[in-house]
Image 1 (tube, helix red, strand yellow):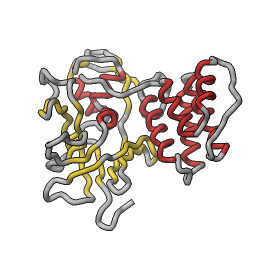
Image 2 (cartoon, rainbow, N blue to C red):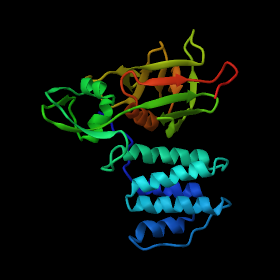
Image 3 (cartoon, helix red, strand yellow):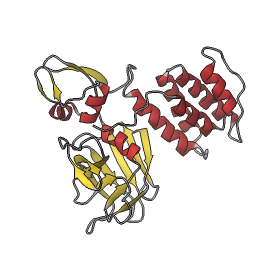
Length: 280
């Protein structure tokens, strides 16, 4: 199995938040290195000072591994400054924190502990519990696609709605009507006979290794780039095609596909929007 991009708090993510706020590099260096010491000096580059203060405080919470508090501040920033030019990037950072929280010990809505009653396959259990196989593997440190009787597993209910918006060049994930994460859409090529908009659902997941499709169980599984095949023929969430490759689908960065494969379980719903006058 390949490596997913799940950071569970890192200095890089903290730096990204502060850079987004226009806060000085001096501030975050001090905040990260000073332990419990409070650092008061915050410099901004033209953003409303309260926004810079909010994001600087979020960075300090992340330094202290207080991810729920950091998330709440980022939500506040997005909601309180809807017209700020940094809003899109702040939303992306909020998405990274939300995904990280799936793998921490923090108690959040949708997360629970499940005790397996009998041995069985992990994929079947994931489908029954409304989660993804990738999540069960990562959240529980498993390397095999099987579960033992009486084994306890951390589970997260993937009640997500995903919208692909070509006009906005964005893929947005929501949970219970609230923003959860977003990813840049790098491009697309529709298969013949398919037109936007249309609803679809996940049919399968596979990897591309040297341009070859690799399914779970293949000797090369875990060495490629993840792709998510939809129920519409030729519609795939995948990385951009290589030179000379003619491929249909919707193109995203490999790391973003890693995260989406965690958030989308089998039969996960995806709406492909826009055209026909452009919908919102």
